[in-house]
Amino acid sequence: MTATNLARYDRMCDRAAAQVIAAYSTSFALAAKALGQPERKHIRNIYAMVRIADELVDGTAAEAHECPETALDMYEEQVLHAPHHRFHTDPVLHAYARTHRECELDDAHVRAFFASMRADLTQTSYSAEELDTYIYGSAEAIGLMCLAVFLRGAGPAPAERATMERGARALGSAFQKVNFLRDYGEDHRELGRVYLAGPLDDALKHTLTTHITAELDQAREAIPLLPRSARGGVAAAEALFRELNEMIEAAPAAELASTRICVPNHRKLVLTARAIAGQR
Image (cartoon, rainbow, N blue to C red):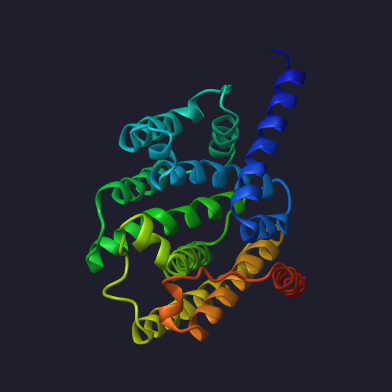
């Protein structure tokens, strides 16, 4: 294969990964568009890999009459092995592997993510300590992978890096907790999962949304430290999930059992434009 053919294949795989994020999350797809290149490409490549793992544990593999546990084990092995090879027949693995190499992702974060995905196959409830571990793997570790993309080639001072790492973890944690609330009905009814520390009522909901706001505030403080090409996209994602959190806080807890709250598309556009403008 010539370099020209390989470059064309690389571009095809990047486009395939972009299609995954477009199909599954309008919010993240919109926020990713606000990133510069090559950050946008790399974030899409990470998201695609993560999304496929999510599908393995959220019922898609079982619906296809495949064993989710076996499929997840095989996929983790493939993901960890992928960066060691320059060509893959799976476009998402090919795209992810190139991102892993170029951005020097940490395999410890990848393993933590898969450990949380594996918990979704075996656990239906969590202690406070178990939930912290789950959130770290399923969300905070992804935030740290994204930060590695943003800091590719950069050498921030240790104190600034530590602040950005805390912000990345806080943002990932906030995203996950918002999803716990907005997916509460589906998780409980269809997947038999209970992530929260008790039945969802207005008091518990308020406690969680207050904590989410504090995490979003912490993440927002770190955004100005990021490279300029990353600030708009991260600010847009933060703004979209802050809006979701406020909508959840305003809704009765009982409503979350049957309704998945979403930000209307026209409002997403307004929030994204405002967030990008605020970082210029």
